[in-house]
Length: 211
Image 1 (tube, rainbow, N blue to C red):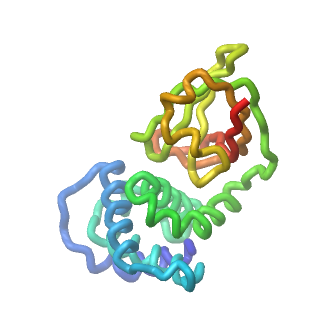
Image 2 (cartoon, rainbow, N blue to C red):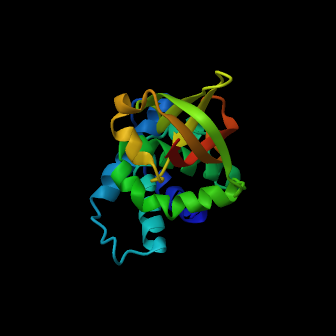
């Protein structure tokens, strides 16, 4: 998919018009929002749509938005001869879309996120923590973050909520679980963090069980 995005953007970038210069974070948000609207307008039939169609549409939508902002080439440090820079661009857009349009992102979760996980060399091994107390759920992040505290040691842990997981229903009303201890299953994965412009390790929750 990276090659598709690269070719489409290269073909379009020469036709861009002048626009007000934006910061890197503003550009990522603009392109993500535009891509959300663009993909939502396609009204895919989830029963029949295939992976290649979703990926091609994602590439076209990113290209269309990217071409609006001449400053994106330098601000986002994208080189079409560098797979890593294309990978980072795709991750930044897709991850920001998780917050902007989670319904649209459900299309990509099973396809594009599989590619991200493979490229990031995800560790398939799952880990477990017991006797964990719920602290809070943060919804104003790039994606949802669930915070727990070890009831024995007092150590705090943060987990990303990326997709559906068994036990997610407990988080529908967090006031009811303040005094409940949980067992948490999770896996670890490296994601690109635009704040530090590098990859860092995250814990991704896969199951939540009341003890």
